[in-house]
Amino acid sequence: QVQLVQSGAEVKTPGASLKLSCKASEYTFTSHFVHWVRQAPGQGLEWLGRIDPRGDHTFYGQRFQGRVTMTRDTSTSTVYMVLSSLRSEDTAVYYCIREVMSNFDYWGQGTLVTVSS
Amino acid sequence: QTVVTQEPSLTVSPGGTVTLTCASSTGAVTSDYSPNWFQQKPGQAPRSLIYSTSNKHSWTPARFSGSLLGGKAALTLSGVQPEDEADYYCLLHYADARVFGGGTKLTVL
Image (cartoon, rainbow over all chains, first blue to last red; front, side, top):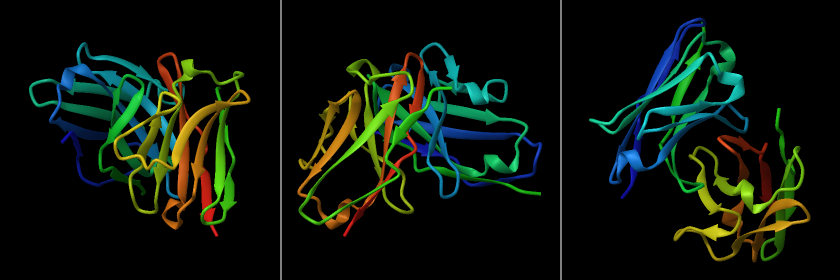
């Protein structure tokens, strides 16, 4: 059964950076894109960007360019997302998602990130 | 900035039929946008229902169907059940970018 297991909840202060992980299992890690999406409390879903684990190629949402970096470690089938210069509006649940040929099929369990002074 | 628009809320009676739509600020939605639909219940992660306009997963109930309708992507629920009460999100593909709609809160009443 395909699984994406995310790292645990984080509490950060404004201006800090955040690094989340997403460990994939039960499929060929380098065969499919992994995306990051977030959901602020009571709000909708927002796409941050994606990484191609095969070649480490990335594409970021316009709003997050310059502030987000996605990387991967093929030896552990793990994708990482760093979001810098955090502000209170970055408080959200962050999800990683596998995409297979335009199909966002499997989602991680989500990681709650709280940004507060 | 591309905007994807959904109905903020809809209400349907049990056993009824309802259609949710997903529009793009760039123009008519076609299969090239590979519409995806997701269901989210309170406290849960979203779950994929439909991909590439109309394809279902093995776990997608038969009463859910996806299509293109009047220049929009559409999700139709036929024979609505109480457990279908949830938030529904569409996702459109714009080359390398992806954009979610704002979501539709479906009430079954």
